[in-house]
Length: 181
Image (cartoon, rainbow, N blue to C red; front, side, top):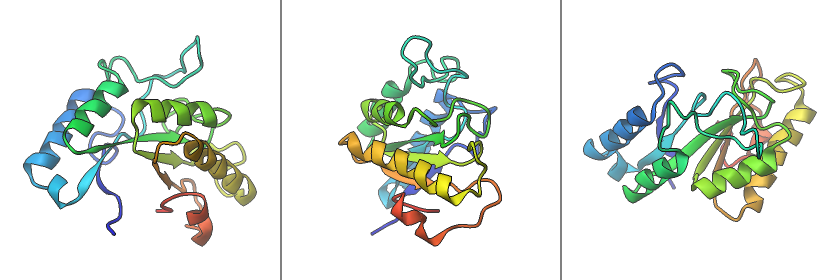
């Protein structure tokens, strides 16, 4: 079985260059170069895909309207129609590495939102955890909350945890995530 393979926006676009247009172009490039057919099917949005604040009415994460004017559902539909899968980024802290809203305290809401959007892959980072990146009790508990929230949606979503901070990889992170890389 192949590991999840595809494209992640961080190493190419970073935060400053991330746009819906660029993600769509990267997806088309996966197809045109034959990478999709070789198994590179994930198109993962890393940090900065979302608006600087949660929705004021319902508290949900929302796409940055300047970067993703069509929204995440439209992007998900675009990718799925081409045989690709959508990945999305969050953080186990209250803020992401770039200072956008994280999932701490909103795990269930964010998991449902991701499922409703048709997300296939969730990367949860560790940059702004409340207790720091090396508090293993909090780390396992908080990664576990997102794992359980994703599983409770009924939509299969690959869950990848990112150590962040200065911690070493822990052999037992696979209990909390589909992938511990």
